Amino acid sequence: MSTKPPTVLFVCVKNGGKSQMAAALMRHHAAGTVQVHSAGTRPGTAINAQSAAAIAEVGADMSSAVPQPVTAELLRSVEQVIVLGDEAVIEPVAGMTAPVTTWHTDEPAARGIEGMERMRLVRDDIDARVRALLADLAPDR
Image 1 (tube, rainbow, N blue to C red):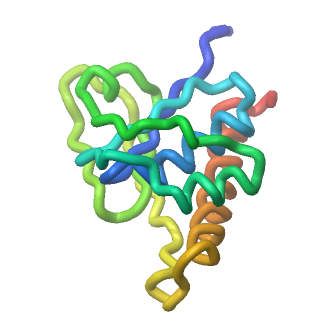
Image 2: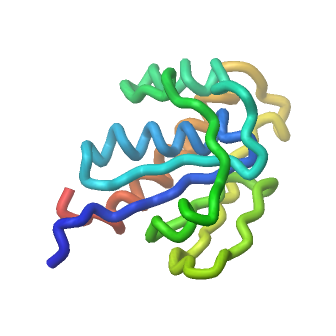
């Protein structure tokens, strides 16, 4: 039985919203039992303020996060890659063993829902997915 925690990488395009939300929620729920990374295929320059506010409402924190690029080294170092949304694409790299799973997350804007109401719906969708993933990665949590 390995004592090394499972590792997961959450990816979106800018690494300022959905992937950072997923990482913050996983850190919050896993309480150190999962090693969490977050990155973007074309990282932006800042965290989405509404995303951070929605995360803070449930007791998690992404306010100090900084968008990071996806690197080959990072892809090789994790056991699971989760892509959030339909825009980011991860091409496998040599030495990478992690499966790539895409979460087709809720997009309330498509239903005309904007602002904090949209962000809370996005957060709740991601939160449910993160909790299910955590149950798979760390069933004893």
